Amino acid sequence: MGFFVGQIARRLKAPALVGMVLVGIVIGPQVGNVISPEVLGAADGLRTIAVMVILMKAGLGLDREKLAQQGSVALRLGFLPATCEAIAVAFAAIWLFQFDVATGLLLGCVLGAESPAVIVPAMLRLKSLGWGVKKGIPDAILTGSALSDVLLLLVFSLLLAFLSQSAPMGVTLPGGLTLSPLQLLPLQIVVQITLGVLLGWLTAQLLVSLLARQNWTQNAVQDALVAAGFALLLVVVAEDVPVFSGYLAVMVTGFFLIELDAPLARRLRGVFDGLWTVAQIVLFVLLGASIQLSVLGNMLGLGLLVLAIGTLVGRSLGWYLSTLGSNWTWQERLFLLPGNSAKATVQAAIGAIPLAQGVEGGEIILALSALSILVTAPLGAWAIPLFAPKLLERGEVDPTKVAVARQIVLLAAVDTSPLAAGVLTKAADLARRSDAEVVVLHVIRMEHPAAVEALRQQAKERLADIRHWFITTSGSVPEEIVRVAQEYGVAEVVMGKRGHRPPEEVLVGSVSQAVLETSLLPVVVVDGGSPLA
Image (tube, rainbow, N blue to C red; front, side, top):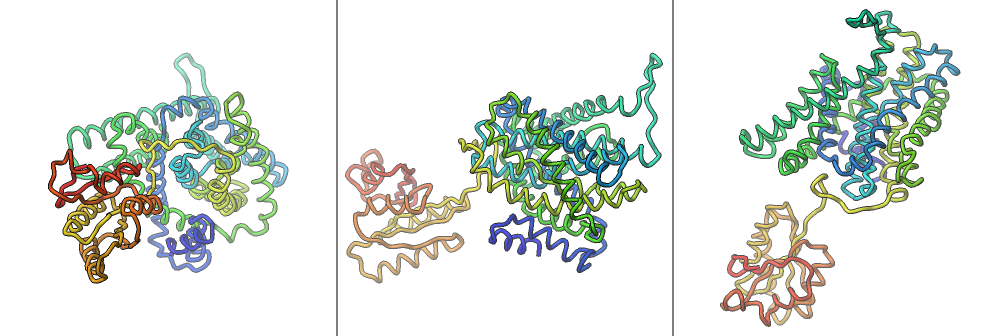
């Protein structure tokens, strides 16, 4: 249901995740209540796996050169927008709900956290299309969102302990100096980030040793299973031993895999793309099922006001300070509004914790968490691809850093001679290697219709497991081959040669020679099934 309703949403020009979240709401405990309690009980674990997959994808898509180019911006994006939004939300909550300062900041930490489930796939898609890649804007947003979650989750845990009357004790240094939890916070942030980066680097080194040097695996699927296992271990250990950021460690693992072994990173990227196809359905349907519609009540108007203040006042100030002195244009800075505002996974994970621990105002925090998901996740997923072409500059795509989704089409140019069998066999072989489609072209001259029909049947037999089209045209053979190749956007042309001259002489004066002279595409020339050029 999540998949198909997501596809309906996509065909209606809305993000697929909108449909998936709606399915979760409808079949979840708030409305239909048809999801098994066992599945709902495993929701946290399933969400953790899905977020691990998307963070690994993010790391495998980072570009070191672009990060070095925008390093200070990425670092500031990791701290300033989240901090400013949390403070703005706190002031709004104190004004509207009469919260105390600590509870207001607690709400700010919940609402200020950015969603990797929405932002990461959207930024990777922008990179695959080339939007903003020249200045490394998607890379800066990816890195900044990971760092901001480290900051806000640490502050959230500190405030939660204080408000639930279980505030941790300070630490006494050897010299007798006692540091309060608030004074320890900067040190905790530095330690979490440093250990996260270090463990990510060590994990990448271990994976390269196991998968590339010692060859413990035999294919890309096994590579990805091992890598996913280690990445999930980082997240789980970080939850039990919170001295490092598990999310950051996973992203750093993917980043260092590119630096240490780019071919391994490319293989992993392809399989993790497939894993995300499944994981996103689980993530967003369970996200919809976890939204507490019953607690929204009369909070809609005030909740939207709090979200607007946090984003348009607090986060906007943070964006301005983060990009101050950079080479970003005002349009690129404006793109941060849709590109860096979505909330979903973090709010679903921690929004109900204050209420469960008896924090005063916990019901309001839970309601605003649900509202932030319902409003910002679909809005962000819709606005990012809509405004990127309007606000960002398009640059050259680096296929070594992202998976470029492109359907490959081959052109098999055949006639009614025995050469057709070799051409079709070679085209089928190439198509199976790259999961390509094939256009079979026959330029009609003086053949009998029965011969053309026999050629059509031969193509159908040899390309039985490959999506293909058989088309016929008339006119000059070389010109028609080049025209059809351009019309269908093919990657390669496969054709046969006549005669038995040596390879170095075979193309002189032939149709193949004419195609080579007029086509900018690679041409595979087949002699009895053996490619010559």
